[in-house]
Length: 505
Image (cartoon, rainbow, N blue to C red; front, side, top):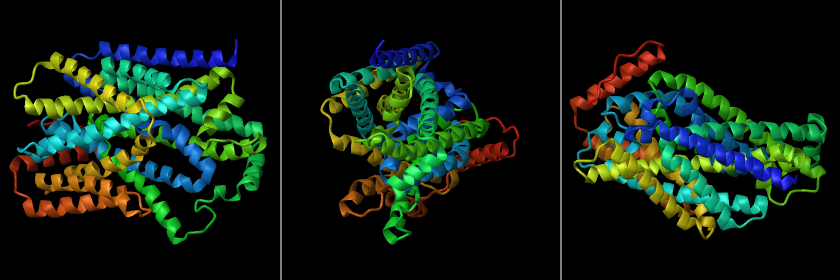
């Protein structure tokens, strides 16, 4: 049997496994809350691994190792910033958001939480935040589909359109029927596959080069600045700006809807603690593997004729060093990174359309099963629109991945933190801050500065939210009671005590 046949067998097995998980999840999806939030019964291990897998996308398996291979450890500052941001998100936001969304009228989406938390009777907060989610995520999903097509084109020499449609169809199939549970459970499998590949490939490559000593010597000879966290130039002003901008990526975690809904789906606020430990273990191991793969790749390809495309460093090493069936599973890990993000974003877009736009317009929404059907229809609609945008590859769409991360981080991040930890936030302050964050992210790149737009967007949105809230805040007993109930619950969780039953409005 040829090596190519083994690769196709591995990928075929992966696709069948993902669809089987989707069927399993579909049988356990009974109503609208099941479809959108798994009935708030997502186990901590599933929430942790699915949050990580849906977050990282192809950047973890291709982008980060490629950046390390090309520029050295100076590119690791993004990984450091993301790791710190993820830890703070699990530590500070996860338990309190899980408690607050249940206390505040059992909110099952991020826009509905904003509306219920601030008692926004104008409904503007819910509508505008849902529109922001749809715009950014439709482009984000399209970027993932493009990445899937390009992957098939480069890995197998096949047609871009065939690869893009295949990735889209498989991802859509398990998301369409399995909903949030299907996306989360497939994310677990995909996350474990990604982590395994990122640990296995560099270990085998180190052995092939001749051990750590030979790897270090080869890196020093081929690229002596690769092991410097400042790029070998010392801590200059431009280097410091680059490091701060890279670490600012961590701020984006506080506003990513597809990660926040994992917190909301936990069975209880207490479950955030084991989920954090599992999630951070996965993230540290995966990040370390990705960085190590990039560094070892410098030594490996210095001995083996060089590498044309740095982002294929993990793929190329796996195909050279591993049995074809294992190399096929490494290729599947790349697809896993892409597909896990697409599936999670499709579910969030569906919830924005059904829960945050349709149910706002329609005064008497249909029953639970009807909403499930409508949710599936919305998943299909968003997927079709994204696929149409992806038919003709466009680099500007792929570039919007980082742009969308900044958009959500600046628009929703300050609002999430203030909603959870500041009593005096007002609906008008939240709205002003959210719009400010989005506008700054859109306009900042026009200034041509080297600072990542997320940082100024986040800071200015935070300032505007606070200032406008101080001017427009009006005391509301219900808001104050819910804030107090949430605080009582989370303090009890931190002390390891059993919290009082939640009170919903």
